[in-house]
Length: 217
Figure 1 (spheres, rainbow, N blue to C red):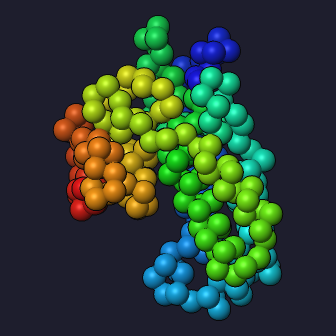
Figure 2: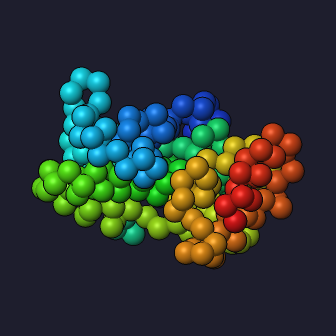
């Protein structure tokens, strides 16, 4: 759902540079779960983060996004928004560039699913916050799926919009492929193939990201 649903557009006025509410998830404390995945350090998990907030369950970012998500009126998915795929724009049906939409891929599945699932796992390991864990599990089930677009690419937005700049240097929509591990050739081969579709881009600043993605596909 773009702002076109409301008859509103922002024609490159600047929000595409900053309206990214889930950007802070990448900087979240150890709720990412990576420490536990690689070390198995349950003591570290139980110790909490500076300020004494438990890492499991009552995780502040997860609680915030539970309140922030809204139900998409057509799909029934829980989506963020208005939000952008950082610095990138798509074309509206009338051909105008637009930045804002509801539930861009970098928000909906990549950042939020990792955040929710890591909190759920931490809650299970420590045996706390059953009620909050149930809320996260219900919300995670309603996050939009990763989708494959008309060009065989991993969709960057909730709808299969045409990119205003097909060779844009940013690859925020590929977060589920790298650094996350939601996409893999073994478990999601079609999505892995879509994530590897970088042939439409020739921007040299994308090369290091392409190499990282290629290592996963």
